Amino acid sequence: MTRKNDARKSNAVTDRSTLEPEWQRGFEWIERELGIRIHSFERQARWRPAFFCEAEKDGKPLPIYLRGERGALDHGVYPFEREAQVFQVLEAEGLPAPHIYGVCPDPKIIVMDKMPGRPDLSTAVDEQERVAVLNHFMDLLADLHRIDPRRFEEIGYTRPKTPQALGLSDLDRWEQSYRKGKKRPEPLIEFVNGWLRRNVPKDRDEAACLQGDTGQFLFENGRVTTFIDMELAHIGDPAADLAGLRGRDLAEPMGDLKAAYERYFKRTGKRIPNSVIDYHTVRFNLATPFTCAPLVVDPPDTVDLIQYLGWYWVWSRGCIEVMADSMGVPLPVPNIPEPAKTFYSSGHDLLVRKLGQLRSAEEGFKRFELDTTWRTATYLSRVESMAPEMDAEEAGEIDKLLGRKTKPLDREAELERFVLEQGEKHEVALMQLFQKRCLRQEALYEPVARELKGVKTQLLGK
Figure 1 (cartoon, rainbow, N blue to C red):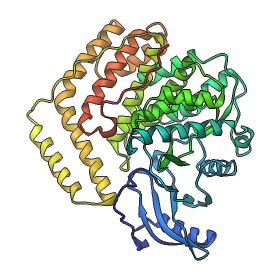
Figure 2 (figure 1 turned 45 degrees about the vertical axis):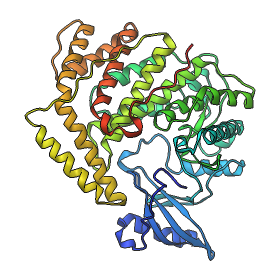
Figure 3 (figure 1 turned 90 degrees about the vertical axis):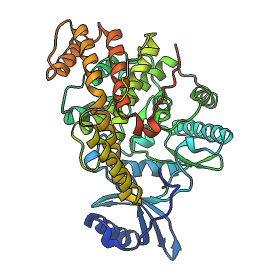
Figure 4 (figure 1 turned 90 degrees about the horizontal axis):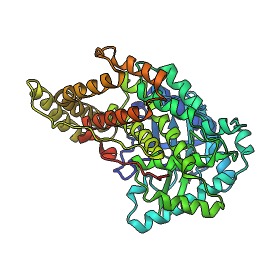
């Protein structure tokens, strides 16, 4: 299965001594147990271990994709092996999916076809191709939703039995993972979580097989070639998959989603209210800050910190903006100061320049690692010059809301306590505070935000 960064020069190698010991063991298992001989391989340039391989089976060429575990970044919401089972269901039901050859148990690796096409609809050659691909995907999504949910139950998924369970979907799983790894007060997350639990749709009863992280597919020549990344698939309200497209659109612009929804409604013959899609958009978006919260506080060496900060703040803002739109709440724009030279700026500037030079001289995964470090250095240089003014302004806003003077080290805990105790009574003020917080934080990494720079949530209105 191909993934992001596929439009690249091949850096395939044959020397397995360059692999970590566990991956050498995995390659041996694939050849021994599956009869697939691997000739060359190239690590995908991203944090998650995965490889594109040129191989053969029974004397015939067989390009394969090896998908490893998330490691320290695992959210633990669904078992690793479940994704392979989902692909097998899709293939059996006639939907485009990679064939699964097997799952290596140690280390855990899904062995699947390397499928044709590329991800990210924003890379469509023109508007005509974008519309054609999105229309095809909406048709396929409707077809996925027509699969009998018992097919997913057979591989271990649970069907929601009540409107409450259908509305909450897998929120409890994400919250459980979040609470297990929580490392600091998270007032914004607690506010959104509380809002979701107070506003569950009460009149929904249709359950379907869902992609979960909707909009993950490859395409070429105006057609979807395969579903990808089905690790968050589950059984739930079809509205959840429509909502997921709005979250996907934040990172990979998909075009007019209202038109896409109309395509889906026409194919299924069922219209879903905007209010239900809005609810599930907030629920879907919250899964991202739930997952990223501990990683932005204590990032492991393998993490691309700026990418995770971007996911944390943009999807948090996506929650607030959809909540506010559904309730008719106006959202403010904070004052963002310009970066200013300080006594320490020369050191930050030197570090950014040197890392920029080093990353330009590398290729493949080493370039990726240097690039993530350069992005972090760029962010920290702006934190040093911009954050003090923004933090002081926000402290005044929090003190005004709480009605008392707070101390820096206690402020977040006191704000979280206020949210938990009085959040429902102060929804408007908290939405406005958190919207400004998100925009301030986004401004700090703005020069290296890349695909998340200035992104806006597609709003549906009442």
